Length: 397
Image 1 (cartoon, rainbow, N blue to C red):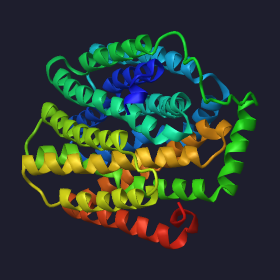
Image 2: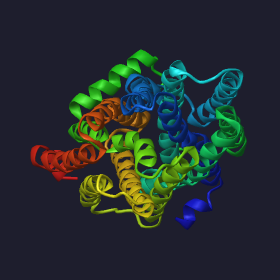
Image 3: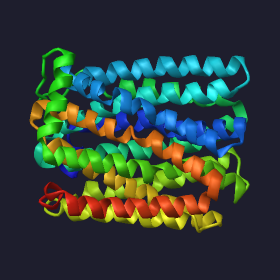
């Protein structure tokens, strides 16, 4: 850990990830609050979160190919400036008119598209900076920067939305991207593990799908990720509803609930950054997925603010650890020139999230939020058990 922090390139990446994540942390608060305040309906709230993740399914493979095709340090800088410009435009839009259903549907698509392209580039660049031997530590350290920024972003976005409206939140998010562009610096690392693939984008895309067909480890990780994403992370659709119905909280209160998740995730990535599992990745992988299912079921049971804060923190901790483990295992499972596309495959897999947000929103409307959470948590546990039974490649990891 300390060796990584002595690296100037890694410190710049860490700061970039932290400031960029201030904007990312605002996404979930603003999407949930806007959807619930405009519609007051769990189905529409689920639709809004589904649209936030839909671009991952559509753009993930393309984003991975772009990450392998170009120099990643330059890509990060360009993407930060583009993101800042988009946030400024959205601040202007919300300053000029009252939010309606069109805003509920379009805003998450725009935010989701930005994140779907940024994430494969940044996580494969983290590997570029640290190398294969420290890949998990580097990814965990970068995730630590992300989670740190998300804490401030979740708190500030909700507070600013209450006081100044959505335009105030988007102005802060634009500033965060500008600072992220500045801190990563104009020069890349002195040495890098990136192997740039200069083949045309379409050929790169074909190579990524060919690798997925022949690489059983990568395929198993993608499939498990897609299913767990449907039943595991979709709980966030119900957070604004639980905050209102059980606790009578507004946008600032929702911000606190998402901050609890950011804190839980922060502790998880600190643990992986300080002490990454080098020999028992499979056990850690199974443990965090099973634990995720259990605490999601607990969320359906609690009706106190303290209980909800603690449980949301635990859910986020398991999801964060699962993300880091999956990202590092995927990159280590492919040749060097395909690592960006491995991260594109991860983005593609988590693009299944819209199905989860749709189903849990509709399920909560039909049978209640508590039973929807019980069922989804149980299915997360079933998924990892079935994966171990059916996939020899996962058992051999």
